[in-house]
Image 1 (cartoon, rainbow, N blue to C red):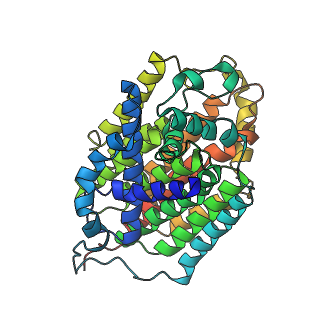
Image 2 (cartoon, helix red, strand yellow):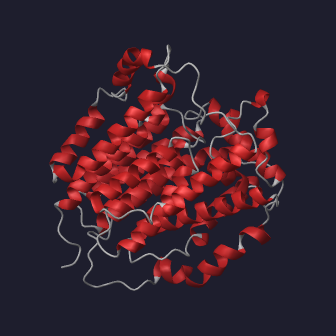
Image 3 (cartoon, helix red, strand yellow):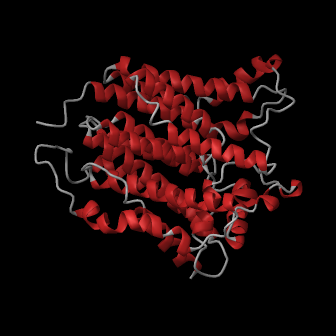
Length: 420
């Protein structure tokens, strides 16, 4: 029953997120948008109730998304009218796209063999979700206990998602379900990338999706992130960047999708705030109009930081005493080695090929954002013993994603309009 409840409450998220207004997109992209919106909606409600000191319950969490979503969910998933002039490319997946599904299947098998998780999931991501789900609130007193090694100011989205899956039954987390959410998040990330790229008429959308899914499945396995925050972080980052780079009309609608996704990024990991700032700056450079889109992510991040400050949850956001630019040389040397991604730099070489197949100039803001993120990582690792081999493989997935969407922007700039 624990596993069934986890599955059912996870499958409920796209329905609870169907309140968002979305123009006709390929089904894969719509499901990804609804899934991300539903997850953020539920987590935001749980966070607000925790700030108010009110325990969670279905009676408090479900009415708002149901009120805005259920009435139109069926029509939006399957009956949304399509513009006959709009082309999404092929209506059936080709053999190249099957490589993406094969990669996700391999990731799933490794997760099932317990070969892709780490101590982080056992020590704090899973434990936080278990505890908060049992208490029906964000239990900050338990979280900030020094002996618990909880990283108390880590953003709460992942444990809140796990706590959501514990509602309505015995108060136990499905730990296997939490690990198996990793291939689900990769599937949703791939669906977002492929669906938006196909909508925008990008050449080689299937190849791009297969490249992304295969590479990130390998990243997840090698860095043992099953159950950790990296898969949902990459999902929200992918959704935000896909909405910003692959939408060609009605910018107000894609701004809403991007704002929700960026808010999810801010609530998922500490470095998510840096990603939000870089993406907002990049969007302003590209379009000169992004301040409205940034309101929700900034408010979301500020709410978490204020909550943490009021309740004494200070850890990762506070600069370390041993940071010093005197160690920049050794840190830079290790960073350059880790940038190979332990694949002889071949992912970056493949990315350059994608980039050169389009209008490379359009990718420059995204490449600058990627470099900015790498410089941020460099600054927080400048210690006598950086130990980048421990975490750089996980944190470097984000700047690589920014560079990947630089290639998407280059392809989009040279793609034909989606209308005939």
